Amino acid sequence: MYRKGTWNPGPRTKDEVQEQKEPDMSESKPQAVPVAAPAVPSDVDITISDDIPLPEVMVDKTIKDTFDGAFRFAFIGAGQGGSRIAQAFHQLGYKRVCALNTAQQDMATITLPDANKLVLGQGGAGKNPRVAREVVAAHREDVLDFMRRSFGPTFDRIFVCVGAGGGTGNGACMALLDIAKEVMESLRLPVKLGVVVALPKNSEGRTVAANAHELLSALFAKVKAGEISPMIVLDNERIQSIYPGLAVDPFWDTANRSVASLFHLFNTIAIKPSHYTSFDQADYSTLLDSGMITFGATPVAKWDDPTDISHAVRDNLRRNMLAGGVDLATGAVAGAIIIGGQGILAKIPQTHLDHAFEQLSRVLKGGNTVHRGIYRGNKETLVVYTMIGGLGEPEQRLTELRKLGGIL
Image (tube, helix red, strand yellow):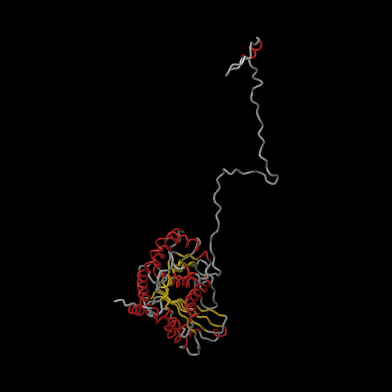
């Protein structure tokens, strides 16, 4: 009988009742189901679980120059002038090079790889250093990461390259030196910072001259405190007098290459053997740590008389120094490298060369050291390359900038 919500099957027999009380559990007992092993491809021996933690694979991020040198240098250029200087080093084979600017149009002419260029802000600094200081301060972590990525984990010294008269290079310079120090500390490298600063031409105006004077004075304070070395001053007014009549197009390239190529010569020659006298890595290191340095190149037209070479070193050196207003009598250390053709060096008496080195020593201040090098070159010419360090402030040039900038 069916009633709503129930089910009555009717009377049951004794056997049916007994069967219900003593059910046969053998029929309901769960049966073990075999689990199939995961298929293993025939070409592997074992499958590794993804649950095992593995250390990260270390990738060699070292950046290498395209030449062998005594030291591995990194360069960051700020502003159009500083970026051009950094670019000149990159063209010589230095690959730890990057540049930043506050104006996209100024960065467009820089031939560094795109990954090594960083544009901060918009529209440039307009010769106002304060604008660049604020922009770099607002993007400090971005700049730090940019430098670490561009330089890699291993190098010996960072150079900050700037134009002293502009807004971006001038305003960013001190902040970049601080960030560069942090980069080297984070990599547990000895902190060694240098700066390449380009001075403007006198025709660039009052604001530019005032900017340059302010930055140059601040940088010299850091040199005296031992916080930066070397400080290399590239004076565009001086370059214009050394290369008179130079056209507009090649001017900036010539100015930047003049310092970059001489710097590069000393870096590469410091690890090369000589048939005569070697200028070695320790000599070069002494110059790099000496404070303000400047370079010169003196071609020697004749060498018959014992004083010919020394006269060229003394007189031409003063005219061909790349930094104007520098008093060589304040120099404490120098590197002098004579490179001559094999035929020329086979004729010149050693005493003539010794006399030239002695003359250079007499030009510098008392107690100086002159590191010498004599090398056989591939051209039948005779050139004396000089690097003078430990120099005092270029008082004459600072006074000139102060007057041009209307600074009382």
